[in-house]
Image 1: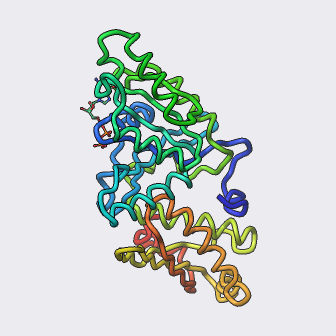
Image 2 (image 1 turned 45 degrees about the horizontal axis):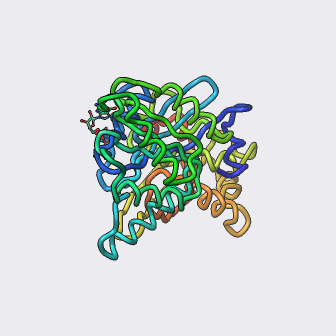
Length: 307
Ligand SMILES: Nc1nc2c(ncn2[C@@H]2O[C@H](COP(=O)(O)OP(=O)(O)OP(=O)(O)O)[C@@H](O)[C@H]2O)c(=O)[nH]1
């Protein structure tokens, strides 16, 4: 995240970031995130299925915000298309602040299989701080059965830490959460507390753009900018987002555009990175600036924007 963006909403010493949750299907990723977040998370169901990087959950704690995101598709590629998707997975892993690599202890009798090793390699290539979680240890016959698996796991990559956990019973998950928070960099409050789970994707995108605009514009046009997502067009390789930045006066429009459009371009490129991270797809952001006098007191307008 850029310095300009941070300036907008970063409390002193606050930690925040995106944590990619990776692992083969059925290893317990959702159960683990629900456990760490502390409640069932509904955001995935309220978002269009077309997004490939949905948020699994957000945990707000004392001085931190941890955003857990999904990275589906982390399976061995069998054809070119899958291979291309793989590159995108790698890209989104690289852009995460941390990775939770989840494995299923109960499925690894006698050692881990090719699927787990493949994900381990992919995660290692991302060069992002990773915590490896050996899940479902409650299903092992004896406590000690986890030991050879943990030893094997530690050989599979350069993990910051390795935990034997049970997402179902909560065993070791508090310690895991503390480690995750320690890995997060200083950063802004990405989402207002309590709103994430039910808010539509367009609202989150518009908030990202607004945050970047406020960061770039600083004191010049303080709260005079409202962001409206006009249309989201999903194409094969790129998602095009048409957004309108509403300002109240012509003079503000000039400021937002900047000399030769420099300012709006900067807002666009900073916001694009954030949105790509959120959605896990390539984004083209088409930003327009429109003068909408008195939008702050226009109820219909505010409702349309979900404000
Ligand atoms: N006994 C036990 N079962 C678990 C544990 N964690 C998850 N499960 C079960 O494993 C199954 C798969 O869990 P999910 O959380 O849906 O797995 P997932 O990795 O999110 O699956 P995908 O979304 O398909 O990738 C469910 O039946 C869970 O109840 C655990 O720690 N112990």
